[in-house]
Image (cartoon, rainbow, N blue to C red; front, side, top):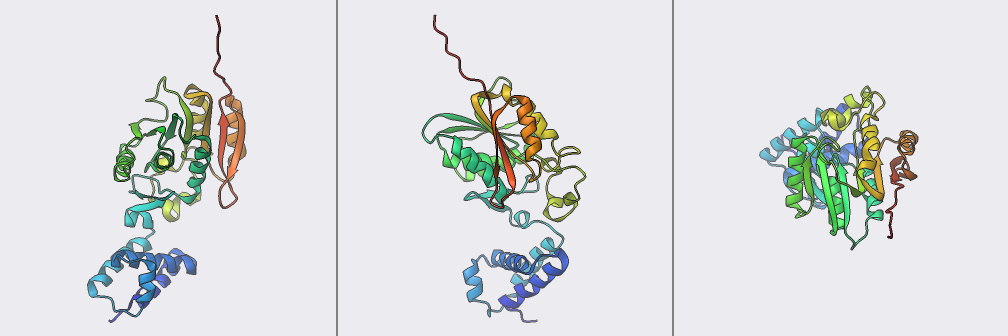
Amino acid sequence: MTQTVRTAWAEAQQRLIKTLSLDTNEAKFEAQLLLQNVLNVNRAWLLAHESDTLQDKIKTDYEALLARRLIGEPIAYIFGYREFFGLNLIVTPDTLIPRPDTETLVETALDKIPLETPFTVLDLGTGTGAVALAIAQNRPEAQVTAIDASSGALDIAKRNSNQLDLTQVDFRLSNWFSALEGERFNLIVSNPPYIEQQDTHLTQGDLRFEPMSALASGTDGLDDIRQIVDNCLLHLHPQGWLMLEHGYNQAHLVTDLMAQSGLIDITTIKDLGGNDRVTIGKNPLIVSTHWD
């Protein structure tokens, strides 16, 4: 049966709506995006060639990608990449898919990092390396260390570092601070797991395909955040900052944990959707000067 560019994505759009319950615009965007990938063209070309007939091989390849999406596999895993803060990042099922909300964490960090002064940054649970690499790209004088407990994730982060030529980032295998004894940083950032283990969203949508260890953390979602906050002062320079991404409804809990640990100047920043997304706190210690 002859199929044109338009009929192909229109039929795919309806299947995405029916199977994944996507809204019309989202389904249309995904159907076109999958076809753009198969044809290796941009959206402008796709719209300008709606009446072109698809070759049988293209139809077969398109159906194969669509079948993967229809069972819920995230497009980022299907394509093998995701754009984040202007960087094109390799992603695999070993890593959490970088999301726009996390760009709030990067922007908050960049506000505290000087442009031309040496500054040390630690990214806890780096995954694809998204946060660490975005910081390194925008603050080339910063010394960035990025850790993850997953060797698979670290392999992807290193590949991203190499392909982006941001090789100044030091990637290490570590379970939070376990491999960083005695080391201190001017800034610690993290997008840790913060979803409740019994949250029904973990069995829905893209989350079904992402590594559970990067998503859920205890009955209230705060186990890893507690561990980070409880140990952060051992690894922050005086006046250094801790910045944590968290769920939209967790800001008051994270604020309380930071206050109990002794951090000061605690503030919560909202994401582009207006949700509480990043909470920051400062080490109150100051560098003491002694005169004889």
